[in-house]
Image 1: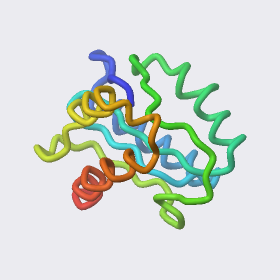
Image 2: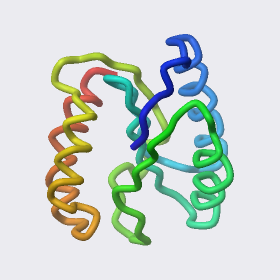
Image 3: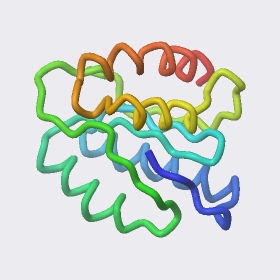
Image 4: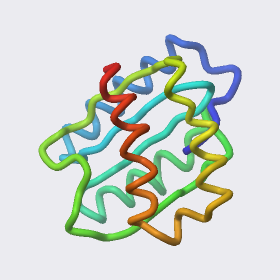
Length: 132
């Protein structure tokens, strides 16, 4: 999760989403990138070295967002988005409140418990993906 810098326009957000979609699909990274209420929320799944390279060498260095908060970083054979390559959405849908999700995750220290994170995340993603 990260906070979008105020100087980033809607058009630039759309460009970010399209560039991420192309890069991720080309590199067989599955997941989702949501943009709502001034926040990005992203899940990346794929080959570990490719995902780490993307995260550490591109995402963390991108000045168009700040306050990057890693919820969970874990190797696993279980995936949320197997066979679902990157599709992205900018949404101000009232049911999608990424800032509230972030506060809940911080309050309950979800990053220490992947199963708890999964249970929390599924309803939010269902709402967001329905609106794609």
